[in-house]
Length: 580
Image 1 (cartoon, rainbow, N blue to C red):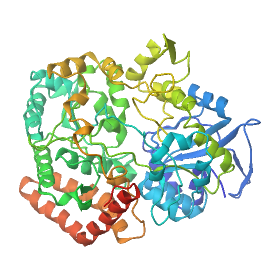
Image 2 (cartoon, helix red, strand yellow; image 1 turned 120 degrees about the vertical axis):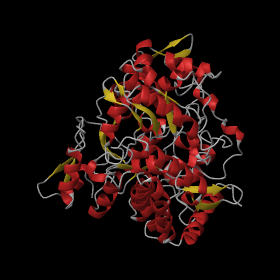
Image 3 (cartoon, rainbow, N blue to C red; image 1 turned 45 degrees about the vertical axis):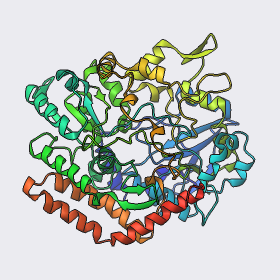
Image 4 (cartoon, rainbow, N blue to C red; image 1 turned 30 degrees about the vertical axis):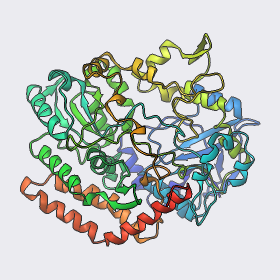
């Protein structure tokens, strides 16, 4: 049975709570193309109706979606002109962990779906997704697009079929490192661009700057402000808790970001990272920052939009958040003329001996991506659409836009129009308004790869990155003798090729298992509740609160959890021929 995911809300008892959460989030949805399904008054789906002859409308649920994507943008309309397909876009309401279980409970699904982590596993276990093996074997573009990487799309050794395609670039040179701590350019400039490499070295800078500038444009200055949730209804069930409270501790202490895990590359054994003493010391530092008033007191309760407002007003001196967390923040700051409030992305670790692995190359992960559901109205055409998304025509359109509207050729070089280039880095709404955000989570070649004309599929190159920096950023980078932020970090080739198909947090864990229960507790109870409790404790109580947190982890027979996840890690490595 097929219906738009939005209709699921009418079938469950949680509808009023979910609707209330969305209404209180301050999120006003944009108009979108209606789903091609009509109701008969009793909740049953009736006939599928094409908006126009020859045009098919597929519903697409994106578990990573944070804003509406109405199918009325120039790029979206061009996609329809070329393929005869239009998408009705759906995204999580009431938290990403809520929607897919509701779909499964109600047995109603969109045509196309992008599920992640637990959601991805739930879809497979509920037999929601169609096998794509035969489609791929007979594809026009997709088979060549992924080449030898296709094996990474398999669900696993027990089920070696392929159910989804995408969702990350097949090549990522990491020219725009996503460091866990960003420091305002204004702070570095104030102190003459000092050589700071540790959390303890940035600490006095932030304290002194805050004392000198207790307000910024009439608003209180914060050393740090943490971003916890999309909705006040969802404080302990939001991925932002992990991004802020959990994730940074690994990279800051020198580990590749495998999420909640540390993976020993020598034997691929896995351990939960919070047991490491250096991880504890990072949180002890956070506890100190809290107790001396350097962390925004609203950090544990404010919703995402409130956090964003503080960032784009320039009142937050440093962020503990990767720059992909909200790509529009820098654009908003530049649009407001606050270029000096942009964040420098430089290595900040727990000590000077720690080598930052921010640019570590995990390899291409193939196990998450867009799948076609059993409810799809026309699976052949849906796959043909995904197949076309791998074509050169699609890659150029979704990255560059439309020739004559967004770019032109000058002496054979694909070149962004000046106004477009400027708006892409200074207008936070431009990319969404033009439809240039239909890259992720669809098949994506990545930055730096050349098309048959000798131009790059993506407009992102080292040269364009440097050119697009603000004058304040260029001045700061030059003061350190560098040319781009990536120069501050060891390059990917510093380390051997990863033996895993992507970071360990992408490995699907069986939902109904002890390991699944453990990880759900870690990510939805222990980290979002017990780590903040340790951070906000008085200094003499930090060890007590931390010990309670570790005891809660050990209550789950952590040795067995290590053994179970190690087996999954080694199986993932074996699938790509990297283990033993």
